[in-house]
Length: 507
Image (cartoon, rainbow, N blue to C red; front, side):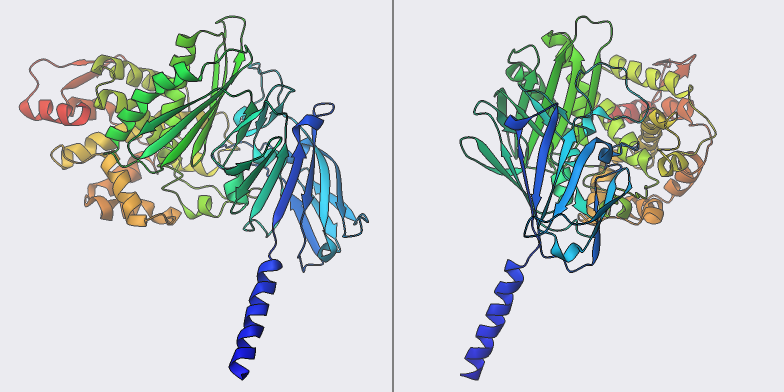
């Protein structure tokens, strides 16, 4: 009998713990857009602290400029269970201190969007694809700009209720349930919420089903025309080639391309912007309604952002795993996250036969030429640790970063007799860490262990940690190629070793 009573008490205590679990329950109504602002309400309780700080991110993963999303928030108020306002104090652009926090039952505020007309004139460090845009016919919702968090409480589950017009369809990779005029979204914590943008618009979606993955292409064009089918047909072979390139081992089983197309009057200035997420990419386009132009611009963005499912989403340091949205600590490995991703984007088409060697060499030539516009005495690791202070140098991660990995690929191929390259290194590192983050200062030594090539130590010290000029001429020569006056060409009478290395590298 005593055991039975004890079990009842344990069960009651367990149920109480579950019922008392803190859950963020957000609500907003797209039909109530007023003066280009959305009202957001949060129902939440269960805190024990005397004071708490409610925050919006200063920055989010994938961008390297201070966006300060709190600047778009107004009319911020916090309430207890009786609807009485609690004392708050705005501490800075992105945070509010809340007093008597144990009495919190909810809060409310207004959110302005960060961009409306797409235009291309924006300030340095402004990432449009990280921000939201509202109109009566479409909504680009980035959760980091609509929903905040209490500092120290980012691991609680989140529910988001969105009321909307009957014709608006939500495209996202978030788990959701749908009713006639309302959608409910679910995230296990704040990190997952931020990782999943949503587009609301008239339905224009096409599903691509491939072995091991289902990909939704969801589009909205301000022209009013449906474009998802044409884009999906163009993306399909790209995804097949990427799967082949990765040895048919895709890191996710579902993915969403969210594409917002703003009609431009002409081809005088085309803009394509994308931001990667674990299971989706948000792509913003500013260009005429010319499907071939749209395809050409989407191709590179879609390829680059999809490869980000490997890095940093699948392979990353503790700084990214434990990301602080308001006081971030950056990893020193942008050469990997962006540089390797960009190299894969260049290398995959020629490796899988989508493009020719000549087209690949033209891309490499462009990277080499553009790289010389940036500082030559800035180590890639230093740029990576201080990207917000070095915005004028940041783009070099896509230039020198990609070329570093090209040299590393050739180095590994040479050491392995052509059998092992950077793609293999990345896949081996992912298997080595098994989804766990790596220690930032130990990655270079771990690369030596995982690959089995101690020569990588000298390579990383010279060209990633150091500032020695990349040995592009020497490494291309190993593949029977000559780099002269910025142009790549065949050398006469390449040796069998040179021919083999080139074949193993590019075919």
